Length: 119
Image (cartoon, rainbow, N blue to C red):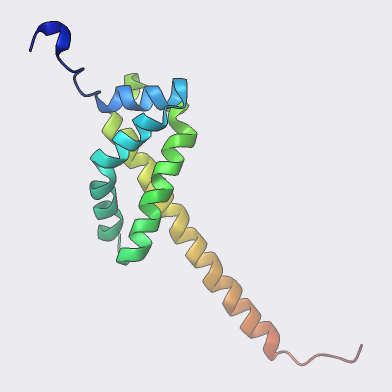
């Protein structure tokens, strides 16, 4: 194979994030997902989430990557660190949402036990 026929080298993680940010490149997102989805899911599993929820959070992480790719700057750290920051934020939001759901359920239980006055 001649030099002109060589395939392009795979894009680095930072280049994929930049392609998403600059061009809304869905192919770049797919490549990033293929490369990191397993590791991100493991991150969520290690955070104590069951398998199905970890999978949902993994998808949510890559949705966040799609939406926030423009915030990536290679000057402030590695692209992998940025990606795991996205995963950490998704995981934190999931924990807060679960806590809010528990608090709402407790509040409903307390309020339903209070006798209603005639209206």
